[in-house]
Amino acid sequence: MDRPLRVAALVSGRGSNLAALIAARLPIDMVLVGSDKAKAGALQVARDAGIPTVAFSPKDYADRAAFDRALFGAVADAQPDLLVLAGYMRIIDAAVVADWAGRAINIHPSLLPKYQGLHTHRRCLEAGDTEHGASVHYVTAELDGGPVVAQARIAVGPADTEETLAQRLLVEEHKLLPAVVGAIATGRLRWNGQPLFDGTPLTCPLDITHL
Image 1 (cartoon, rainbow, N blue to C red):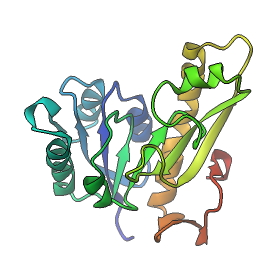
Image 2: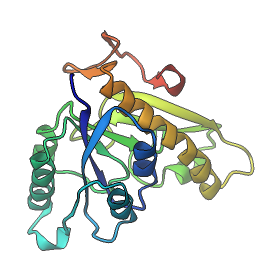
Image 3: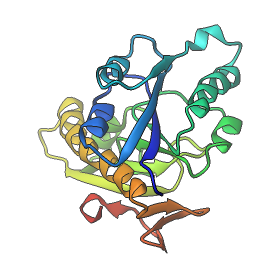
Protein backbone atom coordinates (compact mmCIF):
# COMPACT_ATOMS: atom_id res chain seq x y z
CA MET A 1 0.00 0.00 0.00
CA ASP A 2 1.44 3.36 -1.03
CA ARG A 3 -0.45 5.32 1.65
CA PRO A 4 -1.16 5.00 5.36
CA LEU A 5 -3.76 2.40 6.34
CA ARG A 6 -7.11 4.11 6.83
CA VAL A 7 -8.51 2.99 10.21
CA ALA A 8 -11.89 3.54 11.84
CA ALA A 9 -12.73 2.47 15.38
CA LEU A 10 -15.92 1.69 17.28
CA VAL A 11 -15.98 2.26 21.03
CA SER A 12 -18.40 2.18 23.95
CA GLY A 13 -16.30 3.15 26.97
CA ARG A 14 -13.57 5.44 28.20
CA GLY A 15 -11.24 4.71 25.30
CA SER A 16 -7.99 3.51 26.86
CA ASN A 17 -7.32 1.07 24.01
CA LEU A 18 -8.12 3.81 21.49
CA ALA A 19 -5.72 6.15 23.29
CA ALA A 20 -3.00 3.49 23.16
CA LEU A 21 -3.60 3.03 19.44
CA ILE A 22 -3.33 6.77 18.81
CA ALA A 23 -0.22 7.10 20.98
CA ALA A 24 1.56 4.28 19.14
CA ARG A 25 2.13 6.57 16.12
CA LEU A 26 1.63 3.79 13.59
CA PRO A 27 1.63 4.30 9.81
CA ILE A 28 -2.14 4.72 9.85
CA ASP A 29 -4.69 7.45 9.26
CA MET A 30 -7.49 7.42 11.84
CA VAL A 31 -10.48 8.51 9.76
CA LEU A 32 -13.37 8.06 12.23
CA VAL A 33 -14.31 6.97 15.73
CA GLY A 34 -17.92 5.93 16.25
CA SER A 35 -19.92 4.94 19.30
CA ASP A 36 -23.28 3.72 20.51
CA LYS A 37 -22.97 6.13 23.47
CA ALA A 38 -22.86 9.88 22.90
CA LYS A 39 -21.12 10.42 26.26
CA ALA A 40 -18.47 7.72 25.82
CA GLY A 41 -15.13 9.02 27.04
CA ALA A 42 -13.48 7.53 23.99
CA LEU A 43 -15.18 10.12 21.78
CA GLN A 44 -13.40 12.90 23.66
CA VAL A 45 -10.13 11.00 23.30
CA ALA A 46 -10.72 11.02 19.55
CA ARG A 47 -11.69 14.70 19.44
CA ASP A 48 -8.58 15.64 21.40
CA ALA A 49 -6.55 13.88 18.71
CA GLY A 50 -8.40 15.67 15.91
CA ILE A 51 -10.24 12.53 14.73
CA PRO A 52 -13.83 12.90 13.42
CA THR A 53 -16.48 11.25 15.58
CA VAL A 54 -20.06 10.05 15.27
CA ALA A 55 -22.49 8.69 17.85
CA PHE A 56 -25.78 6.90 17.25
CA SER A 57 -28.28 5.86 19.93
CA PRO A 58 -29.80 2.38 19.64
CA LYS A 59 -32.99 3.83 21.14
CA ASP A 60 -33.55 5.79 17.94
CA TYR A 61 -33.90 2.65 15.81
CA ALA A 62 -36.56 -0.01 15.53
CA ASP A 63 -34.19 -2.92 16.08
CA ARG A 64 -30.55 -3.92 16.29
CA ALA A 65 -30.21 -4.49 12.55
CA ALA A 66 -31.48 -0.98 11.75
CA PHE A 67 -29.11 0.57 14.27
CA ASP A 68 -26.16 -1.44 12.99
CA ARG A 69 -26.90 -0.48 9.39
CA ALA A 70 -26.92 3.19 10.34
CA LEU A 71 -23.74 3.15 12.42
CA PHE A 72 -21.78 0.91 10.11
CA GLY A 73 -23.04 2.90 7.14
CA ALA A 74 -21.46 6.01 8.67
CA VAL A 75 -18.26 4.07 9.17
CA ALA A 76 -18.31 2.88 5.56
CA ASP A 77 -18.73 6.48 4.39
CA ALA A 78 -15.32 7.25 5.91
CA GLN A 79 -13.81 4.57 3.62
CA PRO A 80 -11.57 2.78 6.14
CA ASP A 81 -9.35 -0.12 5.14
CA LEU A 82 -9.67 -1.54 8.65
CA LEU A 83 -12.31 -1.31 11.38
CA VAL A 84 -11.10 -1.77 14.95
CA LEU A 85 -13.57 -2.66 17.70
CA ALA A 86 -11.76 -1.14 20.69
CA GLY A 87 -14.08 -1.79 23.58
CA TYR A 88 -17.28 -1.80 21.51
CA MET A 89 -19.81 -3.60 23.67
CA ARG A 90 -22.67 -4.48 21.33
CA ILE A 91 -23.42 -7.69 19.46
CA ILE A 92 -23.51 -6.85 15.75
CA ASP A 93 -26.13 -8.02 13.26
CA ALA A 94 -24.79 -10.94 11.23
CA ALA A 95 -25.65 -9.42 7.85
CA VAL A 96 -23.81 -6.21 8.77
CA VAL A 97 -20.77 -8.15 9.97
CA ALA A 98 -20.63 -10.06 6.70
CA ASP A 99 -19.96 -6.83 4.82
CA TRP A 100 -16.75 -6.38 6.85
CA ALA A 101 -15.29 -9.87 6.51
CA GLY A 102 -11.51 -9.69 6.74
CA ARG A 103 -11.61 -5.93 7.39
CA ALA A 104 -12.61 -5.78 11.07
CA ILE A 105 -10.78 -6.84 14.23
CA ASN A 106 -11.76 -6.90 17.90
CA ILE A 107 -9.80 -7.01 21.13
CA HIS A 108 -11.24 -9.25 23.85
CA PRO A 109 -10.02 -9.72 27.46
CA SER A 110 -9.54 -13.47 27.53
CA LEU A 111 -7.45 -16.18 25.95
CA LEU A 112 -10.01 -17.10 23.32
CA PRO A 113 -11.70 -19.47 22.77
CA LYS A 114 -12.03 -19.31 26.56
CA TYR A 115 -14.60 -16.94 28.01
CA GLN A 116 -16.38 -15.42 25.08
CA GLY A 117 -18.69 -12.60 26.10
CA LEU A 118 -18.71 -10.72 29.40
CA HIS A 119 -17.18 -11.07 32.89
CA THR A 120 -14.00 -12.71 31.63
CA HIS A 121 -11.88 -11.87 34.68
CA ARG A 122 -14.47 -13.31 37.08
CA ARG A 123 -14.83 -16.47 35.02
CA CYS A 124 -11.06 -16.92 34.86
CA LEU A 125 -10.82 -16.72 38.67
CA GLU A 126 -13.82 -18.98 39.23
CA ALA A 127 -12.23 -21.60 36.99
CA GLY A 128 -9.00 -21.50 38.96
CA ASP A 129 -6.92 -20.64 35.91
CA THR A 130 -3.26 -19.88 36.45
CA GLU A 131 -3.06 -17.81 33.27
CA HIS A 132 -5.20 -15.07 31.78
CA GLY A 133 -4.83 -12.86 28.76
CA ALA A 134 -6.20 -10.85 25.87
CA SER A 135 -6.85 -11.77 22.26
CA VAL A 136 -7.23 -9.90 18.99
CA HIS A 137 -9.38 -11.67 16.43
CA TYR A 138 -11.05 -11.01 13.11
CA VAL A 139 -14.74 -10.22 13.56
CA THR A 140 -17.35 -12.72 12.38
CA ALA A 141 -21.04 -13.22 13.15
CA GLU A 142 -20.08 -15.54 16.03
CA LEU A 143 -19.57 -13.56 19.24
CA ASP A 144 -15.82 -13.41 19.93
CA GLY A 145 -15.53 -16.40 17.62
CA GLY A 146 -13.53 -15.19 14.62
CA PRO A 147 -9.97 -16.33 13.86
CA VAL A 148 -7.61 -15.25 16.65
CA VAL A 149 -4.42 -13.65 15.34
CA ALA A 150 -2.50 -12.66 18.47
CA GLN A 151 -2.60 -12.93 22.25
CA ALA A 152 -0.91 -11.49 25.33
CA ARG A 153 -0.70 -13.48 28.56
CA ILE A 154 -0.37 -12.75 32.26
CA ALA A 155 -0.03 -15.07 35.26
CA VAL A 156 -2.88 -15.28 37.75
CA GLY A 157 -1.74 -15.01 41.36
CA PRO A 158 -3.47 -16.28 44.54
CA ALA A 159 -4.24 -12.73 45.65
CA ASP A 160 -5.69 -11.59 42.33
CA THR A 161 -9.20 -10.14 42.16
CA GLU A 162 -11.30 -9.18 39.17
CA GLU A 163 -10.05 -5.63 39.59
CA THR A 164 -6.34 -6.47 39.78
CA LEU A 165 -6.59 -8.84 36.82
CA ALA A 166 -8.39 -6.20 34.78
CA GLN A 167 -5.80 -3.56 35.64
CA ARG A 168 -2.81 -5.74 34.85
CA LEU A 169 -4.32 -7.12 31.68
CA LEU A 170 -5.19 -3.66 30.39
CA VAL A 171 -1.49 -2.84 30.29
CA GLU A 172 -0.99 -5.77 27.93
CA GLU A 173 -4.04 -4.87 25.85
CA HIS A 174 -2.49 -1.45 25.26
CA LYS A 175 0.52 -3.18 23.71
CA LEU A 176 -1.34 -5.93 21.87
CA LEU A 177 -3.87 -3.92 19.87
CA PRO A 178 -1.34 -1.43 18.42
CA ALA A 179 1.01 -4.31 17.60
CA VAL A 180 -1.68 -6.09 15.57
CA VAL A 181 -2.82 -2.92 13.80
CA GLY A 182 0.83 -2.15 13.05
CA ALA A 183 1.29 -5.60 11.53
CA ILE A 184 -1.73 -5.02 9.29
CA ALA A 185 -0.52 -1.53 8.34
CA THR A 186 2.88 -2.85 7.26
CA GLY A 187 1.38 -5.77 5.35
CA ARG A 188 2.80 -8.49 7.61
CA LEU A 189 -0.70 -9.55 8.68
CA ARG A 190 -3.22 -9.91 5.86
CA TRP A 191 -6.58 -11.55 5.21
CA ASN A 192 -6.96 -13.88 2.24
CA GLY A 193 -10.01 -15.84 3.33
CA GLN A 194 -7.93 -16.60 6.42
CA PRO A 195 -5.24 -14.73 8.37
CA LEU A 196 -1.76 -14.78 6.81
CA PHE A 197 1.35 -13.65 8.66
CA ASP A 198 4.39 -12.98 6.50
CA GLY A 199 2.57 -14.84 3.74
CA THR A 200 1.98 -18.00 5.78
CA PRO A 201 -1.45 -19.10 7.09
CA LEU A 202 -1.74 -18.73 10.85
CA THR A 203 -2.35 -22.07 12.52
CA CYS A 204 -2.29 -20.66 16.05
CA PRO A 205 -2.39 -17.18 17.56
CA LEU A 206 0.83 -15.19 17.53
CA ASP A 207 2.40 -14.24 20.82
CA ILE A 208 2.72 -10.49 21.16
CA THR A 209 6.52 -10.83 21.25
CA HIS A 210 6.44 -12.04 17.62
CA LEU A 211 4.78 -8.87 16.34
